[in-house]
Length: 199
Image (tube, rainbow, N blue to C red; front, side, top):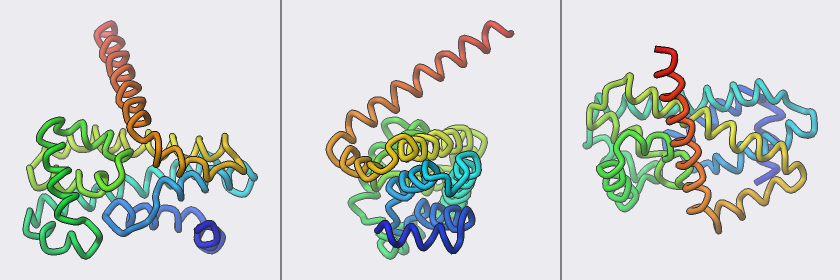
């Protein structure tokens, strides 16, 4: 896996990172978190810029989730049912994500990045349910930025031990998701409080 990532980044650089994440978010089976963490490791080696890596990662994730939203909005449920299995969006995953979306709504667009098998479907569902674009963008794009920042920074901090992220994601994903949710809520409340003071 490392050799594949190395080839991608050596030959295509930041453009390769953007394209990989676009495809990964749409549904192509690419281990996005592992890729982002590896990018962080490369950054720690001084071979890539931290800032440009973050910008590229966020651009790729935002582009990918926007395409998914547009496809869901324009083509609806038949598209997801017909082409979903071809890009590994199984019926089981779709049903599970539908239930989650019905419970937590747009918030799933933010935390969905951190749930394997869910981030690929949330934007399709948002489009199918005709979620207003502005509302979609607020949740989905902020989630993309936080997701990219989290894993690239983890890879940068872990350095040679960057592969541990895959282990942590496998065994501690529930705690990690709770941490993400709490962080988002605290940040959101702080933003509301600050905004009310200014007005």
